[in-house]
Length: 273
Image (cartoon, rainbow, N blue to C red; front, side, top):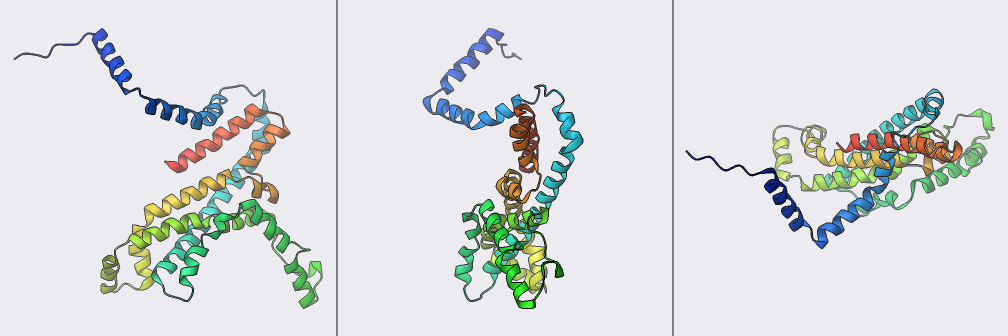
């Protein structure tokens, strides 16, 4: 029985070089250059990981880093849960229910994406603050003084999470609506014949089928939340994004700021995978 002849290392190397040369064409070179330009900020951030910071990290870890981690975690958690509930619920209602103005609501529910989050933050803060029209009207109606009633502070972690939720839920709504529209009516009819009510049908049939779309929508929301700067800065909530800005321009430490950005990039990669 004959055995195949072994190729020498030089022959293997020349064959690889010839295949690589054949694969080079203007399109592949252009795509490589575009990918390199897009990935350049990430490469710069990763390149700063091993650079020394002369004790800045120790200072951050002992003062503000725990607060950055805590606020970012709770903000991501609340916004993720809020957008999941609102986006999924509204998508199910507009797909499965008939009510006046349904056509209008199908597209009106997407409008929050048209307004930047920090603009919503400014508008709601002006409307809900102590000197704003809502509290002024309440004091006028009920003859209250400023200290006679409780009103939640909008410029807080909870306020930031609530407003970001109202802006970003359309990501979940859009994907959930598309998933519910693609689901077979026969599957839902089988559930009805088995005695499933509307809520059990939603929880046991429609929701599991829409899980990939919901995960994709929530992932987009979480990455947008991690990326948010204007609203959290205005509300005075210390997160990783505000920490990166303060470390760079407040402490004058761009290397430490890039290392904080690398930590944030790690969170994004974890969400993607």
